[in-house]
Image (cartoon, rainbow, N blue to C red; front, side):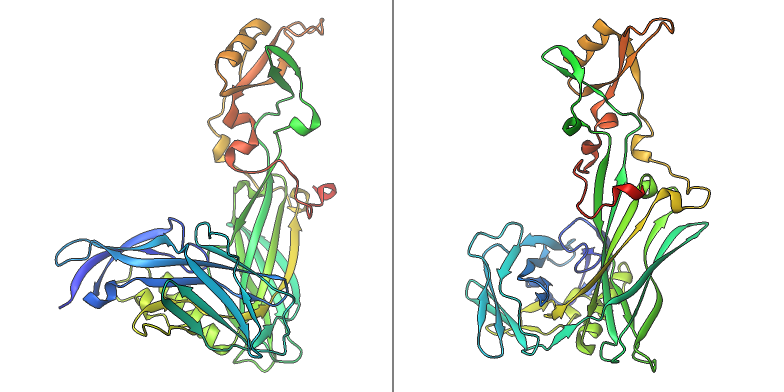
Length: 400
């Protein structure tokens, strides 16, 4: 018997599997589909000495005839052990420390690209294993470009493999941008006294980063040359405050086998059909991981041994012809209040959610301070929004 249920599904592996990017849709399922599905995210990192993995369960909740049910992706696996094994038998194990949020770290030397590798996962008495996979090394990224149109700024990647050995590509990226609140607080209230902020106390400039949340795939399989030209990646909409004070994007390029490409393509199509009654169930995805102790157990994930290529690009406000309009909606409702010296100090003292901003001088012929302006902490301290005041090491401050 089939049951119609409402599934709370996630957008895509590697992007939103363990966050609340969800959308409900109806689909039919067989009762046996209610068993937990292991979700494995990560790859064997050939270009570093650490490989990171994230494990979680997708499972049916409240399954029953005529009842609503959900596919819950937010159950991290914290009791697993993960092993990378080379074809010659050398093994590297995940840290014995308790996994936080399903995150696992495997430390290893720089691995030999001439070997093949596989992954082994043990959760209690249940074991999962992949086949041995060949190492895929990405060619260098050719160029990153950007173009402005009426809708915003589109970032493109160009790449090529002169040896015609890559063919199947995937890209991830991380955007970083600088932003500032409406006002710069130069004063701080400490023990009832007003003083200037020290340089390490400034909170008027922050940096925020965001990882890509979609699957970006490209292939040259039907081309005579192994080259990808003008492939669109990140898009920054017009009016976005990402362009307030400077924007950077780090693109990571991954080369895959045809099998891995087929897996990611199916996953991409599944995520894009989310909400479609006839879209594939996540359990229909087949990577190269299987459960060796209970063959009927479902697992979503593909094991890859890859050396990525990276390239970073910056866009400054000065590069934008007639300056791209920016609307910082977060600070749209902010207001600046002011009062006499005594009034301002008393108000901020009694309302710790407010900060002093600048001095007030009511008499243009007298430099004496007659009061202070102030506003809410959320409108003055850029860290409240989630950014950090620490400038990234890669940030070329001189060009912004």
